[in-house]
Image 1: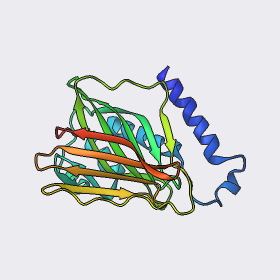
Image 2: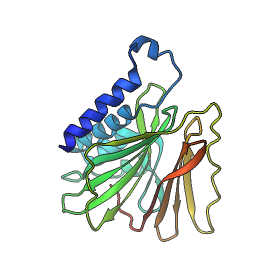
Image 3: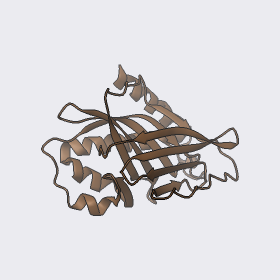
Image 4: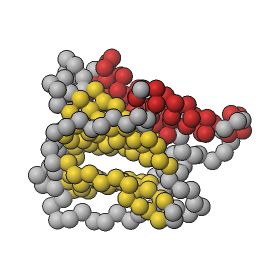
Length: 226
């Protein structure tokens, strides 16, 4: 049932994104394409199963990607030193938030480790010059109970305005490290604040009804890596 619902949503999103005239649609300004982001996340998960967990992480990471172990590290540098585990963690996307122009998206979902533990992940995906997506931030945490699986993968797109101002990043508190970013059109922004003990606060803002609204807030207490 869950797989069927996800497939229906993907087909619907594809139809909306491409429009009736495929050739004409390519001449329009960049726009949100949640289908492509979900497809990238699913391909990422499949690559982890087939090629190895950290091999897939390296393959899908942007050059400037950051992850938390628990302090922020350059993902490509950290991943080059890791050996793939015998069996990869598995994961599934549950929800995607996209900027109006599609330049940046955030995915939240669930993961399961071979040892039976469960958790969630939050990943920021950035569109590349060739139209593909690479992840630029990844973080997660363990959970006492698995996340409930949705019937369909949800998708929310930011409002489109000629001058989306975005949000101004507040300075990190004393002793904290902050990482943040925003879409090219300013309609989506994210931030992660890391305390000295490695705990993290994650926030995602989306342009809705003419203002930036918080659509996701998370607190991660442990250094769990998806």
